[in-house]
Length: 597
Image (cartoon, rainbow, N blue to C red; front, side, top):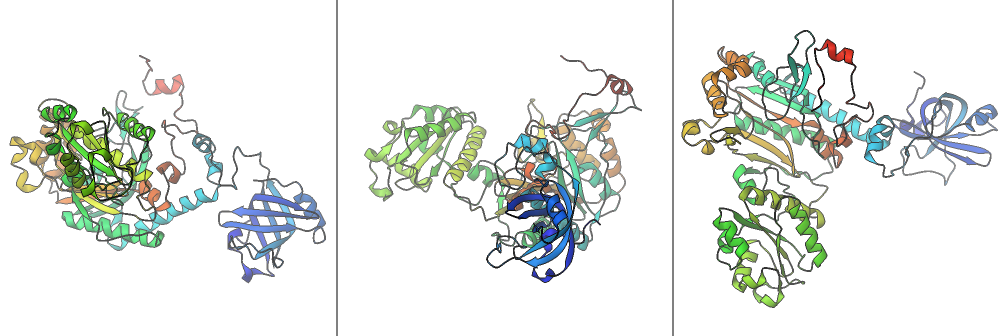
């Protein structure tokens, strides 16, 4: 090695020792005849002093140093002079008196500061990701990710799981998202697909008798990117034979608690994790991944709204829609511009607007509220008793702001779910030092598809229906429940899973519900059905988003912050400039031509 010590690991116990360090120049300072640099490696920084009275040639060489030069230095560890210690860093009590220096490589001026917490355009960071990754916060996050993966492996190994790699080039089958396709050179006109998940492979491993499988699996989905979604991502993939739903839910909770307590013992964590049914989550929070760090539950106001004289409410309800609302505590004094901001926010989600009802501007007793204190465009269509009834249902008080949305049930839920998040963000209701985990259970198996008579799986087509509901598949598909579950944390879907179908006849029946003819079923999934004919055990599993878990543990805003080389918001790799054109010769080898329509 070109060094015998790491910069960030030096302390008072090393005083008097001769050391050789290697790294990058983090900062350089000239103080009269002395030159100081902070030398940085992955472990941290150490101060190096170049004194012409100790090593004149070394001091002369140090005048050439600039930030990000790669160097080695040799010298003696000494205590810093009294009064110059730096308590902010672990090496703040010592410095190295340099006797020898070698410049291994010079550096151009970086496009952004490596040694400062400056705000930098994300695309610039991604273009120079190798520089961005030098920054201590990014290195800390990548090391956190490494530690998490190691803990997961150790945890599952202790429970008898074995890690098995599954193929990256597989068959294209409809699983919910758009596949990335890879043309085959040796099979002209045919394509591989990159796996959206190892779903079918891990089920086949259960048929193979492996019983307990896991994998830190790469997955690929050709979807639009967002804060918690990338075209390629990593999941903690797990499957178990002879397991019941409760076994897998308990495994998920134990594993997450284990890693959180090891990596973030400072955060608040409550167990057992609460459980909400899918129906409860949708009714109370408008989505199946609610942030439970704060309240503001959505309440159905349709029965009250139908008795008002407000035509907007009455027409929506008569058309089969819903009127629902939430409360924004202490926001009764919102200005006209603030109310218009909320209106624009709601319109951006597809709704016509939000009806706001201000219950006065200062806190007080609800029973003493008068219509003179109520401010709303709908006020003249509401009686005081109706306002009070709505306020009580929303757990509101004087000084609060009621936010009411009317429309089709699905849209109302979506809008109020996002509006609830927005109010929580504005009012800082969510404790950033809390990880609030919960399980969503009792998902329906199917939902109506786009075509008449066609049904789509709420999860994926391999999910096992509740046994007593199987007779309803033909007569009332919307009533069929599934053995499935999601793990939620702070408003993010961290992972989910299900028990799986493991018999040919039931699996074919579910495929038929999706509108597939028997010939299509055999073409797309014949390999799975045939495997089930050879003694498939009952099995189930889960997949947790590794990137999302690291994001939550690191307190990051997006998973792009916790992936070494992520794609940007347009799914482009700015470091390698991908995707990029290929040559005509490459296309010819694959028997392909590009046509622009």
